[in-house]
Length: 308
Image (cartoon, rainbow, N blue to C red; front, top):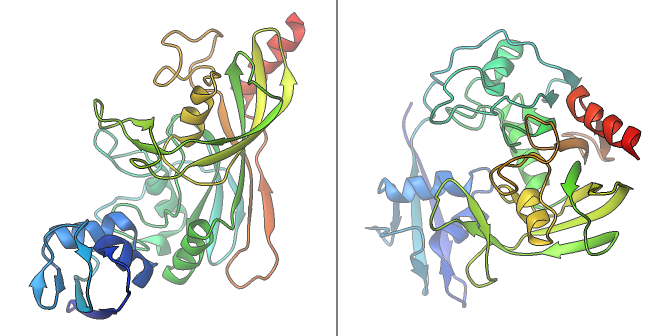
């Protein structure tokens, strides 16, 4: 299969970053994928190779993008049980258990949600990428709850657009150390890569980070803890954990951004993606899917209630 050659004309009056311009032209591609195409020399500006992702387009120009054919995914399906909440020809809604990584990454080349999903729905192979077939959003390894996987390219693009345009409503349950400053609130704190630890993220100033917004409300209050319902408006990496730390209420069991030694007997962070509302491909009205609190987290709450 031959490469695809795509042409785009930049005619804006205001200068714009190359990668930002291409994200708008090719919404079906992730920013990371476009940045890799630029890095590999597959993007030109007026027939000159683009120098970097952040190169500024400041005059009328023809931008060419050469897209190599998608390679067959080098993933072996694994017959790992999945808790499927909903499924149709376009997608799967899965209740992911804590401890399961969503897609292959360094140190996690087997046993991921993607491996399990490929055994369940082989038609996902190659949809949206080589190593992340079907993936349109992610959950941290130790966060349980709802995640959507696309089963074909059209559904993948549709679902990505829903997330990109912030038409998806996600609700998480989080038990935090301490109490938030107000029973309900809105947190606006930009997030960027941690300069000291590149695998981590950090809250930063607005001119350096990407905008990040979360809303929360108190569900239940204990002596030293608060159960919160958190609604992330944006979808930055580790956003909820960072935002709750920002207001002085780290997630119980989060030994990365929170306390090094959990204050309750828990083997992972108390964070669960319990509800998601989204309009599915081919439908006009949104649907809501829910996943109950898993047993390990429910027991933590039961123990706290018995103590009060």
